[in-house]
Image (cartoon, rainbow, N blue to C red):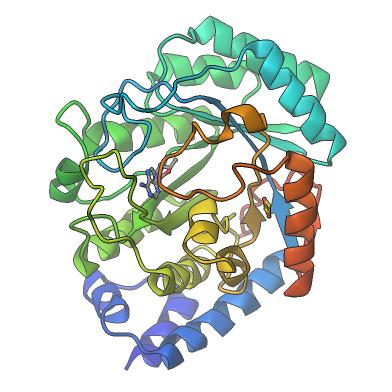
Length: 349
Ligand code: 5AD
Ligand code: FES
């Protein structure tokens, strides 16, 4: 009986691997509705009906990696590559600040052209100009020393999805140059340094099973991250996984609710991929326990070039349009977008 498992999950904030597998296998609409209501109740308790917002700046689509699922993988010769300059990035921050954003997420492919000094300089310049803002980095696997340098320059948070906690599965999604072990080490290093750390995975990525998802949940429980980002896997036409089935929205929403019960104070975004798989995906995400949205601040001229998967939404819309659009969308479902930095607040005791 899934309702019993859901009650246990809410109380104990975790389950055994076998129980997670059971929870994830063959759930009904009624089960999903049952956990959704609990997830919403928990989110309201910790965050009221407030939704934090992060301005996403996709500053480079160069990447040295070749992940089989990702549209900006290095073997994709069809993407037009771009890099934003420091000035471009600062311009995005200026516009974002005026629109009320107090967190900037610098995201990019693993692009070796930006040196650590350069990145540290960009970070400290943003921090000097906008001392009341948080800076989140999402630039992949780096050395401990690099992570430390960015932190000292003023970076506050780091997003690095683990993608899958199962080694065999990891190997099916990535070339041999990448390893789950290193990914996990990076996450530990980031935590040790003092970042608010975000991790996560794609739902319905090729070869994923309920067992692997249970391992993802247990890994997240162990890491105890401040932020957890999940979204459906969506194919990109110029990747080896072009013909693979997309992920399921229903399972993504169900997992958002599970994650909300596991880490009730976590920052959980209703992701762009969720908004891409269904026109109301982000609203449904919030109504399943998510409490963050991450509109795009990148210049419209580069938006289409940062296509990790096909049909990504908002590639033609100015940041100001997305802000208003999201404000209206959230209001329609009873939520309010707020400007606060939205740092992770640990649970007392
Ligand atoms: N579909 C959905 N999400 C994807 N990502 C990368 N490629 C895809 C895809 N095809 C996600 C990965 C990565 C994040 C930035 O985007 O989980 O960590
Ligand atoms: Fe970008 Fe709606 S959020 S247009």
